[in-house]
Length: 142
Image (cartoon, rainbow, N blue to C red; front, side, top):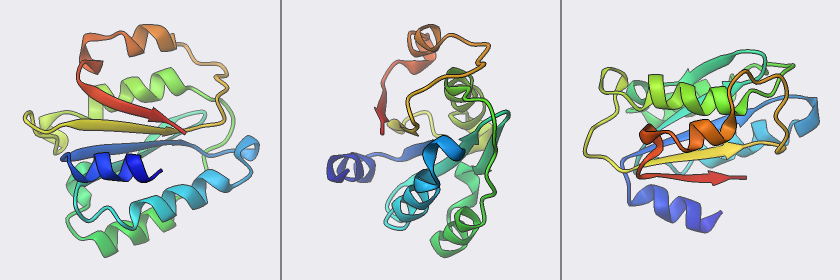
């Protein structure tokens, strides 16, 4: 994890993409909440996915780290499906865009917290990962 944080501090924009459900046994929720605490040196977003995809904290909402952390602590779990490919695509289409606070010149990181299983996702993970929009985005799966 230390390498992930070091990478985050050297860039401008990071997204935590997290799956909250029983298969994760609550651990990801705790991990995300702990992970965002030291992120006062970079711009970050939190996106949760399950049966739906929801941006819990946008890039425009984290200028006040204390307020952002409180918002993350209040995240309510989305259950059912595991639509990882669709969630990554959501980040590309709706988070890493200028109108939602992403800067063209910033380096970007996606950190996916998942149990590794995809369930009922209409999108193909390989297709999304090979998308031109993924070019130059550093990604971690934890």
